[in-house]
Image (cartoon, rainbow, N blue to C red; front, side, top):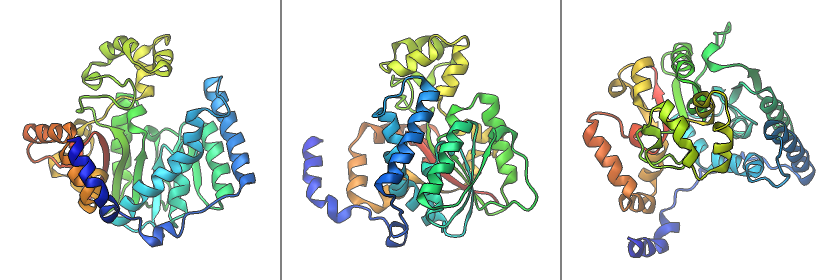
Length: 321
């Protein structure tokens, strides 16, 4: 396998997917002073959240640079290919500190960001101001959203947020937002770990962890190689709740319960499939992996289910009839 991957390297630049010029041309850059201001806001936010964030904390750098860059180069082209973002109305659930909000708004989308953390929203507002983009924000739980007069969304997107909800919250949030969406609108999940997958690459970094019951997982997390996850969950009075907030997987079963039979849903696109279809080397590389073999195994067990539900991480766009 390694030899085959080495043979593919010379063809990588020829086959690599390139960001469309109309998207890349809208990327905004902030100067050093603005970066310093944003870094200071993020540092304060991380200190308030963890009590011990270093100025060069890796998660701080993720909030500052990497998430915006990753969204621009992966999520944005995928979304825009399904429906142009320019002029689109987007409800972004789980806006966090605003990296994805900026990525959407700089493309001309009208964004309403929702998050349960007022500290994160304060940073998101400052980030948008520094980047010179406009967005609206609400501090709210998606499971309690109510329609506002005249509101109509082209996209409703759960940005890395479904996995951090409790089971009742998740079902209620999915059902409510599906009802909020008009016919023809796109309901999406971004960067949510798939419960069907054999390895939990999101939270515990353990094999089969997402297959465990909540009670067993809350006890077993003590074996996670991640110190931060163990410190978060093990001392908690309610370890199951702490683990849910840290992140548990989602699968097609919740879709069956809230949106309708998953096999009948109009899945417009899945981001991993989108890029493999457009990048020959990436597609060939995937076919050489154990993950591809596991995807095929799942497909045999779940005939008729869109392969977007069978990826390690769920990136799905579903059109409401």
